[in-house]
Image 1 (cartoon, rainbow, N blue to C red):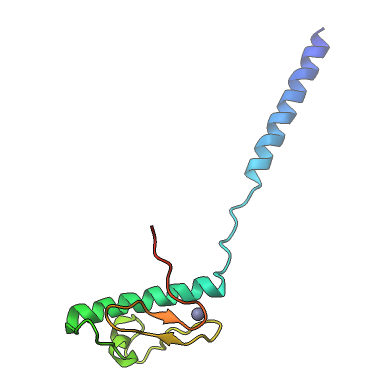
Image 2: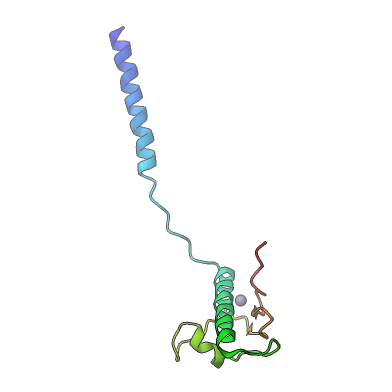
Length: 113
Ligand SMILES: [Zn+2]
């Protein structure tokens, strides 16, 4: 009878160790690189943010559009920094103050509900 109890205890211990090992050995996975669409939408968010900052400082009329040169100081890449580009070579349209910037391939950033 004692042998049977010992065997059960050993099996329980091995099982517990197996479960612990399984959880211990799962390493955190690195986040996957963004898809071209995600990268493009992030660029559009950056451009939109630059437009908002430009608008706050320059007080444009609602139908006016900034130029890339206008936005360059607000995109956060310095005065000679490269402007964001669509990974699939879509063309960005800045639009007026009232419009969302858009990509010829990926469109605009979807609105959150
Ligand atoms: Zn795009």
